[in-house]
Image 1 (spheres, one colour):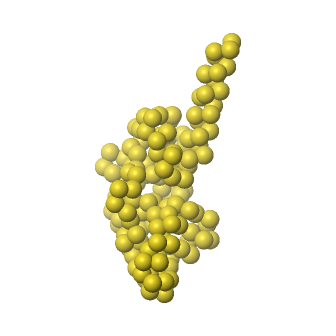
Image 2 (cartoon, one colour):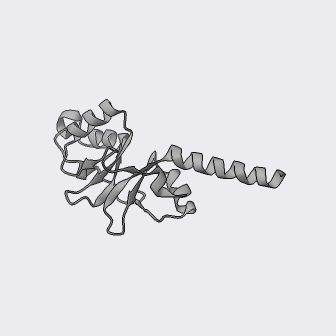
Image 3 (cartoon, rainbow, N blue to C red):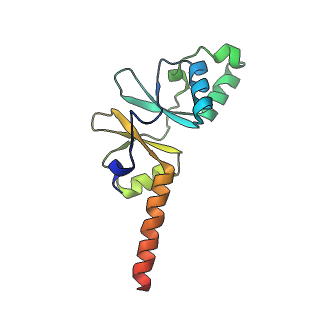
Length: 139
């Protein structure tokens, strides 16, 4: 798959800086209908991804929204979360990543966040590839 063709560039997709607060992020996610958003530091280096569930568990762990609303997004990042893919990722890497999230963060060789590939685009690509292979077999 040519990632560049499906890439929603950093300027076109939502992402959070790690210093934003839980309150700011939740308001943004609600108004934009996001369920999963990449997080970067001030230099643009990819740090991880936060999801609605991460916010929920953080709020529960801290005793409610009022207690957690001023915490920084960096506090929600989980260790062991699926890493971002390089822009040169293979089809197998894309397939595995699509199983883990709604968007697949893409980084360059310096681990700088460049954008996301929506899972729908990956599923569509593999569906078309499978249909073409099936048509070639029956032809």
